Length: 539
Image 1 (spheres, one colour):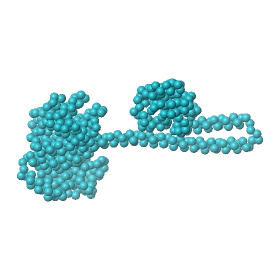
Image 2: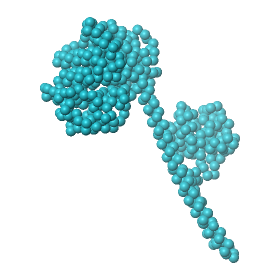
Image 3: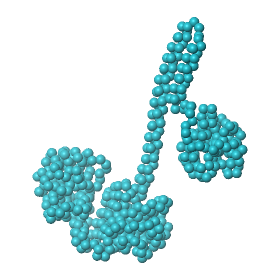
Image 4: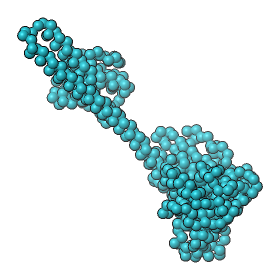
């Protein structure tokens, strides 16, 4: 938001909430006892959002261990503590930062509680804050929830770091002697320490939103844009906060924006995970960003993945120390963005591995079922053979009809075995794409003139026994694996000559069809020729 486009009431409200956060942080920094921290937390949250009443408590495994009394505390019964404990233990996922519990609104919440905030502590304990309805009768909006959540972070930090009370007292005494600029610096230092706890997500879009909101909130900047651009794929991910429509930039405008920022940076050669400030932003204002950026940082997460952070003019004058803190915030945020990008890469690899494992398990299950069916058929065959043998011995002479019966039974069993065997001989050629068949002379001509790829489609045992010089072995059963490891980068326009079949298997036809399925257009098969009569040329 630029100029006076933001209402004065919102600015006053934001300043008031920032003042509450600053005052609460200063007050909690000098408190050593948990009960005093609870009372300060409840009163600050109640006054910050204008609630009618509130309560604050520490919830352990067996109930409320410590309670700050207020208008809602009379409803905090042991039964309610047990229900709340069970509900919090049932929540899935890692819980480190403060969070709201919407599922407990209503009948399970004490009194007329409208907001319920939970702050995870150490040793299985949780800090709980409950707020009644607003005095003005309005519904709590996102700003109120953010203020309460920020107060919850201060409350959580104060309890966890109570052992540092003496040092905090010295800092608090020094804060009273300094001006507002020093107060903001100390607040930013505390916020920088908590940034790693606030941004615990692994989704790239969520990390970008959280980082941008944190920087805008702590440094009182009304507008900001964070852009990630992958120059390899052309993909762009944008996060815009602070009101107004997000910038709609074309691919050419994004490239120009990064080029202008790189030209305005002091160091033109970007190093991975290092945020470089942009010193000259005059030309950037010509692009349709929706605001005039005051500060900008350009960085590189990995090869071809670049990032750009643009911030609007601060509502308060910034000091040199705050500029250094802003640089530290951005540098730490770049590390979180890198972690999210690495997690996305690992997740994609895990999904692909899980898919392959599922296909392998399905194949193993099918082979197991086929083996069981074959075992049953083998047992039936042995039984029938025994019956036939006993009948033959009981006869004085063999008749022609007996031979015919044996022949029919043998043929039926053979067909049954062939049907259940995963490697059975197909009696009818399955339909598929027609592959052009060429002669030996034309195959050699393709190899000599166009460096055609000569592929032996037979199993590995036949390939090792006898094959054409220079041929590549691509068995039909292992086609996908061999193709992915050795031929994924093969030119689709290069001719491919496939050979190798047996009496029962047309390995060359199966492999040639799979090459056609991989978008290879010039695939041929050569039949009725011995492997030694072919030559693969140079691969």
